[in-house]
Length: 186
Image (tube, rainbow, N blue to C red; front, side, top):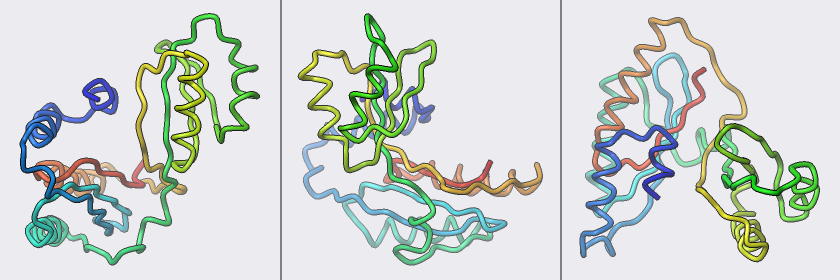
């Protein structure tokens, strides 16, 4: 789990807070809540949180958007602009990538990429269980796995405009309840 967070360039503070929260006995009261809104210059932003106090989290997230010229939206206002995907990084030892891709299409794999760190399989969120089960049955080592929300369209901004959006993202990332942030800014 820590490897996945580091691979996703999650700030060290967020990783440490997540570990602390996971080891805390009171975590049974936490629930996942998704916030949606628009940042400065119409950038769509999704915020995944885990909270034990939804009122506090809503107030905090709303204040970050308001302070940075954005607005918190209603459920469904930007989620449709992102594909909810899963990914698996596997070790490429003795694997024919083309054959693997053809075989795993039946389990929902949409894309396969090869890089210096291994083979990366992308699929729809719903196919996570089937792909994981098949990888385990074939005894293919899973180096990491996780979920992402990938924007279906992106928006380019000037450096000054990007800086305004980054300011909002930094404020949101600083919140203890925030797990992940996704946006459609290039």
